Image (cartoon, rainbow over all chains, first blue to last red; front, side, top):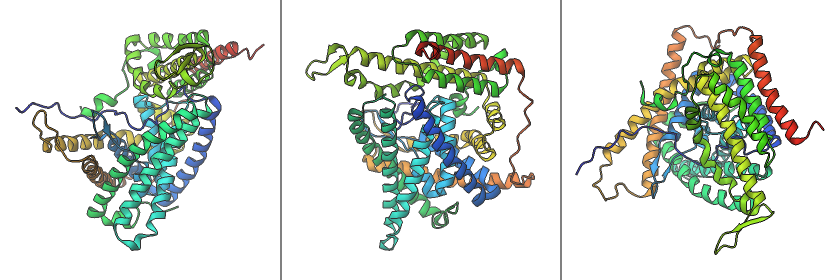
Length: 232
Length: 266
């Protein structure tokens, strides 16, 4: 009764519904997104340049390819749906916030160009939501939880789970408010729906992130105890 | 050819004036065009139709078929769901009522959703045309000479290059997982969702370690070839006037359509 399965090939899977296409955001909201993103990116580029020196490009480029591929690896959830990760929090935990922002920017930018997954004029907002917010929030939550590290080694994994879960929720909240400001999606309907759906998606993100960190702690503890990229 | 390459290679080689045009002109033209379309007011059907005209012209000038461009543009559609509640929440003339729930759909709501979808579709078509006629390497070189930071452009070009390597690595890991997860027809395989998520997490962790170690080898290889920390880009010749004019005309046309539709001029 063995059936020959088609060879699994990574494909552009539908993930958290956060890649905003063009046309959904008003001009002013998209413009504000660009202003914030360009300002934060300028800081991130300077920080990465300083702390990484000439290692920066190969390290961050390959790491962005890793996040890109990790987003396409999925696991079956139920009823034909599948879960996968966004990766912003994981990138921040493993690489530090500034390198993570650049890595996520490369991922979001290429997705818009290669797959039309996310728009061009709204790319500033997409980078802000999925790259900057997830990295900064994920990093902040993870560091905050790590202050309780004395309580045991599981704290690190709890921190990773919380960082990933909250980062997805914050990204979803930001997207919802931007859509409401653009008069594209009514807040009273969209807010509970987006927060609810992403609370579940965030659990998947948290589980994957914590398990990924557990694997890295077990195989290359040196990478976790001393972040690959020093803090600013 | 890598399996990944089949889904990520967006460039469609043709010999056409659009393909050989300077990437900067195409980038600025597409970007300006998409921004202009973003301003389309709800229910401005004529403006939307007029905005689509340049896309038809570019499609034929690039020797692409409309079928090809349209087929590629459907990737962005699932996001439409977030706008659908507008049908029921936008106040206006009631067109229909959903039985049982008592929700009323308004004409204004339907117009709003249709406009958002059309705006989005036109923007996606423009992006499809840009990527189908310009190799990624040219786009990145164009971005660099338009002033995007060196570090950022170099990182993105490495991402594009190594995505094939890391993506194939990920595909092999997925294939290995599928091989381990045999199931009889009609029976579910594998454990709880939590267990499945942690299996994937371990795969992601493993992929991270392999990628990081690869980046160290890549860096060592670059150093041994004399990389001194400065990613270099070829100089771009200056923008050819006819191409700059064509890009300016495209953006100017798109904004003129908006100006007329909004009555900005009167």
